[in-house]
Length: 461
Image 1 (tube, one colour):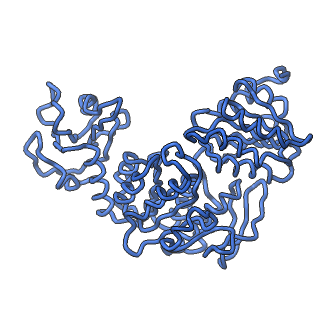
Image 2 (image 1 turned 90 degrees about the vertical axis):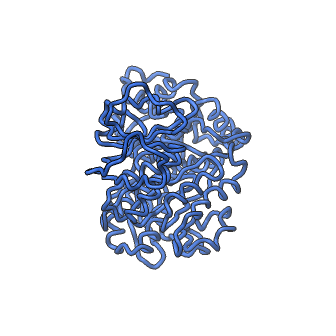
Image 3 (image 1 turned 30 degrees about the vertical axis):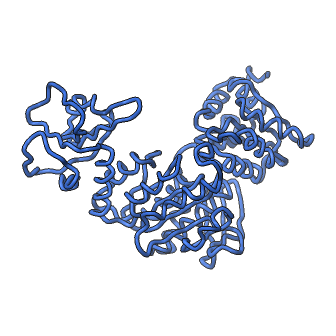
């Protein structure tokens, strides 16, 4: 239960005389479709919506009370006993409530940001920390100026570890999240090309990601990618650098890959196993080991947690197709950095005769989008056997790859998802591994669904 005391200092006035509530609020909701009975409703205002218009629906859904932006008129008909708390700005009030609740519960907070790997690192952290103490993590993509406060307000009062993913699209956004969360541990996974359109350069992206240290608690821990040269200016702020190179504080070495995942050496702590594809996930696991050791998690709990991890869907997600082929669904999102890493992953898989990369468009790359798509072709090589591109932007990848392709690699640009699905259907068998990777807007998982439902009679392309 969330105490009404969290509203102290936020309220300008109330609709009714405030009496001592016997119970707190069950939760906080900004969306009437997700509101639970007994919740505090917080109506937010956006470019294309105004939550104040849905107050009556919130009341019908069982809201116990609501915040109300003081400059908005009240609906004509309200239940006589329904309490409204008038505030200057409902979003600012939500964020301040979250900050107050974070300090009230006082868990150890681990903040995670980076261009790629945030969600995987969050899931790995949860797998490890939840074996040790009660742990709560960001659900779905609740990682922005609205989602992070809602995540904090949703954590149980008994939570001891809180894992918060922090996303952004511009300067100042992660600084705000960090000031709300006050992390004890801050992790920066890497610097990629996402949001170049807004931030101008990869140096700008690095600067924006390092804003996570803004609210870092005194004596807090900062863990960064030690292999990323763009983070070199921030090494003095780092407690620990993790990576494969000898200049890192915690070195990852002796990496062995299999279809089941990876095993690797972490500094002088011995070997660890990870049931995930992608060598970049070895580094994500390294961040987790470093963070867990810093906050006192036993080494055996770290090992068991990594070995039992379950990831959020469509992130190098493994499944078997109807023909026995290995499907690697990494279609949740994409940047040039993550796409190239995913391609290297499928190339490194042992025991397959055909290795296929199905790639789609990448978004939000700004004026350099053609160059960044073409750069992906740098890793298009054998043992990859087939490259299938879908979308006008992905066509640049195919065009660049053709310039240096060898006879052992087939390149195909599909005009539609259906065309791609039909072609994939002719290739898939038990000796095949197929990667699917594109930005979220491409919905590349639809190609998986399409080719899986095709009959053998549709094999001709």
